[in-house]
Image (cartoon, rainbow, N blue to C red):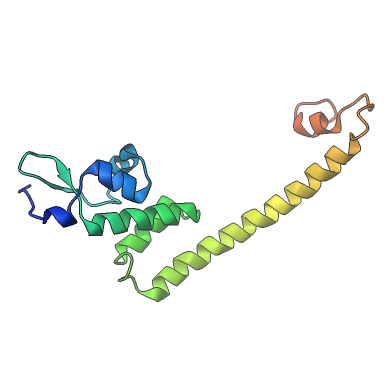
Length: 144
């Protein structure tokens, strides 16, 4: 790949990109390997160099991950053109499906909270010979 020419003001190293985006250098390399982040240009000496476009994509990936989107969902949004260019209808479809999954997980967590709170309350006196918490966790106990 030929060396790219960016002005010094708009280019930075992988370390600088890591700091700007708040992600580990190995994470950047991983996203490059799985083609989530385009392969960087190289300086004349062969060092990776990045610009504002890569920083924006990486920030988009990081924020998407923070919101719980899977890599495949993020890949789909990036394939649509990425931040600033993807058609809203398609992004809406992906985000709506993700929201449905989040709501399902929340409902499951609410059920879990209820079961766990009830179980913990059963052993609140500390004098019960059988521990209800251990009983609920012990799938191999006799009688199951």
